[in-house]
Image 1 (cartoon, one colour):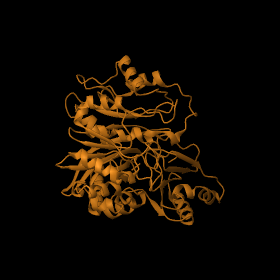
Image 2 (spheres, one colour):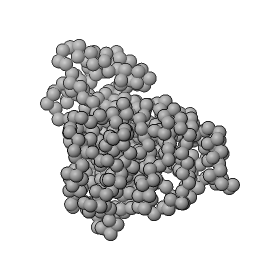
Image 3 (cartoon, one colour):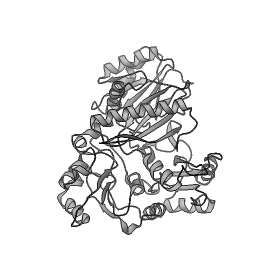
Image 4 (cartoon, one colour):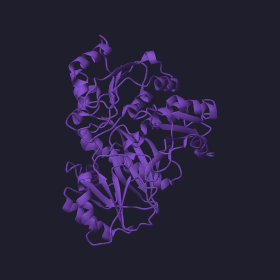
Length: 466
């Protein structure tokens, strides 16, 4: 039996919102006999839907909801995992033999290591010793990434790690002086999908729509514009002074790609490469497997990703990790961060693209996962699935094309449109835009500019990566 835990980044590191829907992607990884631990009872319609695609029977799984903690059922409270009564409930679910083959968590929390230890299965949680000492924070800190990348000889953009407002002011001024673009990106140490990035530009006409930086700031032309910016934004960027801040040169016109790997006691192995696409500086969709790049670019992406994976492995990290990179207009590959956790890409390529669609078979297929745009109003999961049937867009195993909904569509507030993600399996010669456009015509009813970006589940936002 495996123990699968549907958690997210520990709230002690970064505040989170309602993650009930996002963490239920855990069902794509479930196998017969597994024990799943979630923050709440899962959405029954989604569970039936996902398991129908994977072939796992509901009765072959044991599902437990952890005790409601500080965040009720919106997020798994790390402390809930070791509540004595819940530990006994887990023991009972494991049965008399209590044989555990693996402990798998979406986020490598110290609380998971403590649960594994109290159950006597710490050796089944890869990297338990590292994670038990706060390794999850160490491995997902963007400032630490720059130091590790530099040590591994992996190319990164010019930049600085700053631990004070004065240092950030000086570094911003220095980088802007040498930057060909006249712009820099400010990055929080802990955030994801561009939500913790702010782009500082001097040219208001610069094209930035494709960039993974949710926030945009046009620097005032006056000499004190930089100082004024940091006087206002240092608390946001540093998490009220808790974390260092990364400032790096902005690379306009670059393509966002990634190289995923698995680090084990035996070594590292590449698992997949893909592409990220942004619209309005918001993560819109991603495509696997990666296409449209030259062989030198692919080789550089895999080589740099492997070197980073080895660096993180040497530090003690075990598990899946994603090395994010940019392909610059001239073809050079530079790396921007490592997500040392189960990323938002793993279910797309491991479970859906390879497990269900089988993108390696003939005829060729690719998979693109979309975040529901903020202009869509989807009432809920059942309504979306019904629309897929009506439009002839539901996934068809015979053609290996169509839409697979990746997570439940749970509105964050009563009456609010649901925000979720869905995959389109398609023929690369035909593309995925046609299917998306038909869904857009059905659901695009929310006026632009009325949407609260802080409530978008798919981006991992809260009033808030790796």
